[in-house]
Length: 95
Image (cartoon, rainbow, N blue to C red; front, side, top):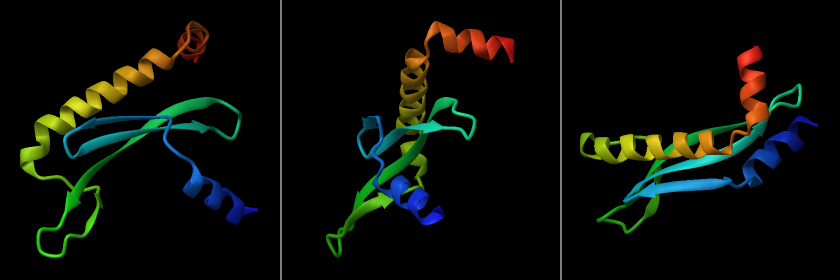
């Protein structure tokens, strides 16, 4: 059963992506063990090697990426906040 959970995470796609240049935030919809749904995001930087032409993604950033990283985080957080319904806010306040 644990293998099935790992496979479903690998095939799951983000519900939304915010991109600024090479920097992206992939937003994922998750569900806790008790059934509560929430969103979280992961950050990545796309790259292409000049020497080999290899393309890929990295979770590491350069200092020159700082402004784009900040912008992507703000936009991803705003998108997640927009998805919250008034019922969700009431539950959060009660907790």
